Amino acid sequence: MKGWWGKILHVDLTSRKTREINLDAKMYVEYIGGRGLAARLLWDMVPQGTDPLSPYNALVFANGPLSGLPLPSSGKMQVACKSPLTNGYGDGNLGSMASFHLKRAGYDAVVVTGASKNPVYIYVENNKAEILSAEDLWGMNTFEAEDAIVKRHGKNIGVLLIGPAGENMVRYATIVSQKGRSGGRPGVGAVMGSKKLKALVIKGSMEPPVANPEELRRLSEEAYKSITQSDNYDFWVRQGTMSTIVWSNQNSVLPTMNFREGVWELYETISGDLMEKLKVERRGCPYCNMQCGNVVNDEIGEKSELDYENVAMLGSNILLSDLKRVAEINKLADMMGVDTISLGSTIGFAMEASEKGLIRERIEWGDYRTIRELTIDISYRRGLGAFLAEGVMRMSRGLGKEAVEFAMHVKGLEISAYNCHTAPGMALAYGTSSIGAHHKDAWIISYEVRTDRFSYSSEKVERLVFLQNIRGGMFESLTTCRLPWVEVGLNLEYYPKLLTAVTGISWSFDDIHTAAQRIYSLIRAFWIREHAGWDRMMDYPPARWFKHPLTKGPFAGAKLDIVKYDEMLSQYYKLRGWDENGIPLRSTLEKLNLSFTIPVLENLVELK
Ligand code: PTT
Ligand code: SF4
Image 1: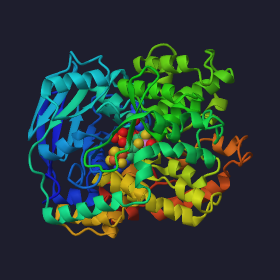
Image 2: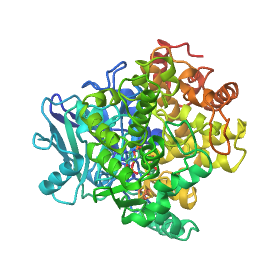
Image 3: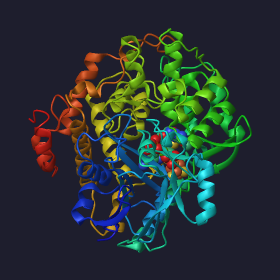
Image 4: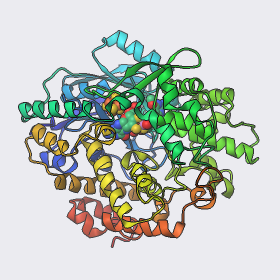
């Protein structure tokens, strides 16, 4: 078998034992790798009803067959677990040298279970693993800890680590790498902290198994060339995802004042054009020739790597109108290891709750000092920060019905930076994403604003399923960066061809589509297994978009229509082979080789 090592490393921190688990070829053909592999491992290894912050949860670091190989933007990997924020399936995508090294260390994935009594880190090198003391690293922020680890093990390693937020089990703590790459929005960093695991350090130098290296080289060369020849290439390397600020404002989807509005008169104070003027450096993931990590000097003259989501959620969403200050909060979030999207959302929620008198504390919109203080207090769970560390779903429940309406989350995961008052397709994308409200599975909003924007059409739903299968299914499982396709138009046809060259197995888009359908239904089964009384309300976006119309911009007065949203949702379920409550049909599970989920689901819900 080529493309995969055929084995994963299992580290149990309670018994301090490590072992290799061999996986058969069928597993890889059915689940591809990355997210698909992680979903299957979590189904198998996490007992039903597990408290996500208990030793029984499993933490998965998974490569896909294309990760870390010499092909466009391949330096990505998945981190996954049962989420402490949503209690459902949670994962994130991270671009780092860790993916390169894991590819060469002899494992397709590392799975960590149990919990250590004292702080530790795991060191993996070419088919061997050790559990080492992290007493001296515990308490350090991610930048300091990475420097200390590099000093100990040298520069030629991949490091994935948590900061104070992960140590203190903030429900949206992430895993950070290379001082500016962060992954695992649904609290994957908190699960790492619950295991007292400060870092995973990987060094690999073995030749990765590739079926047809000549063909891989040929296809890669062609694809790299096609990327640089794209019309959008120059603009992309100048602005990266930051160009989206102006686009979002122009299209009334820029999250503003806790998603109350879609436009902000001060958008230029945080725009991609301004970022270009302040830019001091460009960074990126391994094997990428369109690097998008734009680094600026922040308010106190330190480096901060900016992306659209970070800047929108810590800028317009909380009315912080100074890019250098936004950059400082963004850098602090990376140092603390906390997700910028959830951070901007919980602070925005607290600002609105304060404005409405639902909490006693005064937190003014755009108040830089308070935002800064809260970022640190959240990470250490101090004072009001401890309340915000729980995320908006839990915060809102304690504050009553009014607060629930402006708690911007789906299934507990805070919404990433697109306001959907005028975007029903994107609202459905958030509603049905595999991890809660995140755009990574389907960024249908760009298609939506170009086409029939306000419609609830069946074409949109079909497009959504297609995008989810490509983005959330294929890219998250291969695992490579999707931006060469999304941003500079790299032909999708390259991906089945690359997969065929690497694995030696012939892959078509139909095969990939079937694997994606399988992955979506398995993840759905996981959610149902972990949530008693599952129903279609779980796939609804927040009430604000249905009840509180926009008051500013060209679409003032607009809001979503709940009846039409419901019709779209029903059509979505049909395309997935799920019933009216979003539960996979028995026939769907059988057809997708997911019959092993049936006895579990039958005990919980009526399987049709
Ligand atoms: C991702 C989410 C995003 S999506 C952003 S900015 W974006 C935020 N980044 C954060 C950050 O930074 N620091 C921090 N403390 N929290 C952050 N939270 C937010 O996390 C990222 C890029 C980007 S930048 C995007 S869109 C693309 N995402 C990809 C994806 O999801 N899959 C894939 N196959 N390729 C992708 N390519 C692009 O990668 P999560 P990264 Mg990220 C600092 O982690 O949990 O998936 O949430 O990984 O290496 O930083 O690259 O406008
Ligand atoms: Fe990483 Fe950006 Fe390149 Fe994607 S485009 S691989 S996120 S640097």
